[in-house]
Image 1 (tube, rainbow, N blue to C red):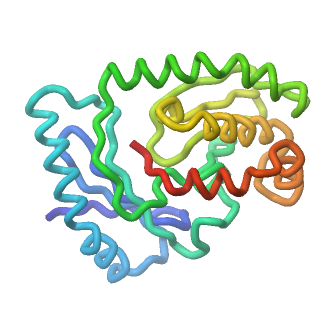
Image 2 (image 1 turned 135 degrees about the vertical axis):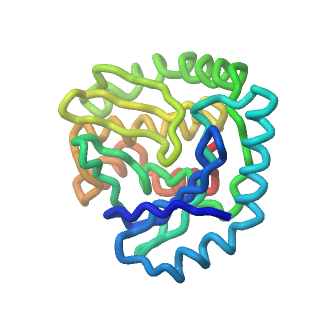
Length: 223
């Protein structure tokens, strides 16, 4: 089993099965040992084999969508509750917040298709105007643009400078509470870039149960 290892300045280790040939790619913290990476791969070997088999079968049947990624994650240093996730590009990318979509040890294999995408888009578009009308006056700011997309490592992101918010399309297939929570989280970034005390204070004022929602969201895995 060939594994490509890419070392980055990150705190967590990510495993992706990349189309079209089901390539195994590990993104690992710069200082993580080879032994730790090998152990991570060995522990997840059944899942890797299942994900690769599913992707290759889907490819053969021409039903795989090009944006599918199989993804798993292991904590690097601080665990799932650390408040991090600033993007070098200038946007706030929420890997551990508003919830880490890769926090389960055994993610199930899923292939997006047109029907699933359409269902998710319809669900979010039906809720979004109501949620924006509700939360914009409360938060005091509103996004300039909201984009829906399939994401492989986060539930949402925000670029405060431009006011643009991106939401994971998977939220349209989940409990509506999670869409509301992620939207409030990203709209709060229109005030606060990071996840420090001021950000948490605002979140507690807007949505007192946000930590519980984050814990519940952390039980889900990205599709």
